[in-house]
Length: 170
Picture: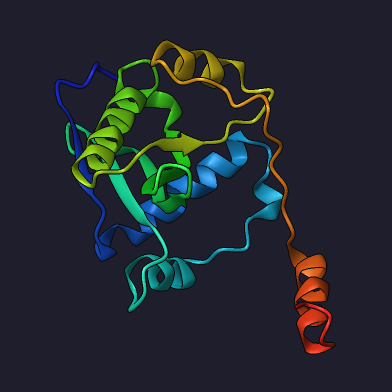
């Protein structure tokens, strides 16, 4: 494959749903988490482009070929008193890595954060992903080593939510 002449970053539209689905599947395979993917094109379309979008997506194209994506949404910092952007997923197809696609996605996302007067841009990275960690550090990103991410999902989420029904969730 020849080196692309042009990388463009654009907002995703509903017609990109199958491309986004393919890129998310590629990300899950890369992260060794493909067995956890339950999303379908239909629920992806609804959650991204329906009446109440949960997140936004930007698409990277190399010479018109979709080569990567970033999926993000707003969070909020009480300490800053401002919105932030949480980057949920960033993925570049293997054939397009090393060509600046990932950096251009992050540059565009930083510009979006600035345009929207956000106080910060944040994301997580798997501990074993040394190449991503090195890449993020090269951009000036700092790991938040004093923080541990917690998650409640699946049956544990159902059980915790059930506490409200029993009157103990106050």
